[in-house]
Amino acid sequence: MNRFKRTLVGSAGSIALAFGLLGVGAGSASAAQSDCPVGAVCIYPQGQSEKTSKPTNIYYARGVHKLYNQLGYHWVYNNQTDGWTVKLCTGSNGTGCGTALPADHLKYANLTPINSILIQP
Image (tube, rainbow, N blue to C red; front, side, top):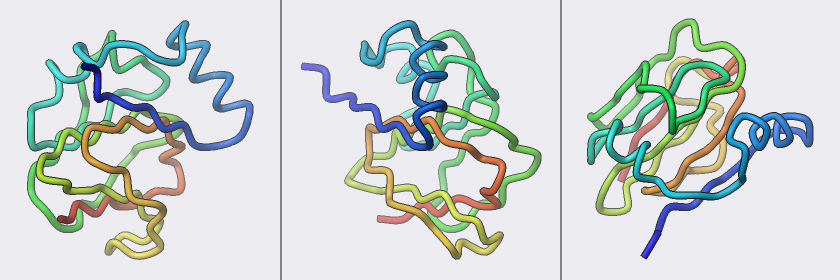
């Protein structure tokens, strides 16, 4: 059973761009799962599919992780276990966070305003 879910954020234009990059809106998570280790949060290169590229950033530990030079739209995959979530935050210290991305979810997000991510149980 494919438990993999996609969450798209942003304007209608970014959603259209996301579908254009993937060709389809849903599919197997096998590529993302094989490249993003279990227990990690992975960020993929700007404007590239998580199915055809390797993660540029991989985070394992809970807490706040600062982001540097992440501009434009990227796929963010939460391959955490035990219900751990990840939030994208505009503050560099884990403040100004958006909605939590649940475990085993993928989000296409504009990382230009994002300065940190928060991984928490």
